[in-house]
Length: 237
Image (cartoon, rainbow, N blue to C red; front, side, top):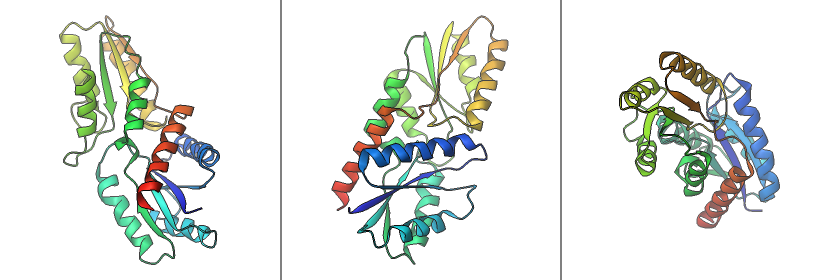
């Protein structure tokens, strides 16, 4: 065994995302027959670099050559481009086993194709709703997906917002709008999105608004991650 894998998620006070990440890790252990761990960038008991160091220490003596860190993030925002690399560098400065950061989940074609399959495409117009980033270029993946599928992009934390996009589409005469949450797992934000959609339904009763589900754990997600981790192992050994 050459590598161990550490899934890094954002972290949340809502327990559902971390439960889903742990379930995903268990499925990947079966798929890859490898050591799989989980860590959180925020809201964990220890900073991420300490979590990485602890995981690497657990792997020492087991023939592990390196730890491959997979950021379970969908866009290249500040967390992916700045925060995680800093934490990995801190861990590597004092660790026996070195860690490398794999490209974040949302950058992989298998995952993009999975999200494309996830949308039903059964309505007049559709909106991809992502968290959004203020970092330059951080939302380009979402914009590219929206252009590819001829849908609108909206963001939870930056503009244009979901309300902005729904209002625009209603003004063009759309009567059925599907909202595709570009989120990996359900949690506090997806609950807030559902509440926002309920308010929009009251604001626009003449429009049928359909809210999709987050990507969620599925055999397709497990297969996509297994494939990408396998390719990372080949390219980095």
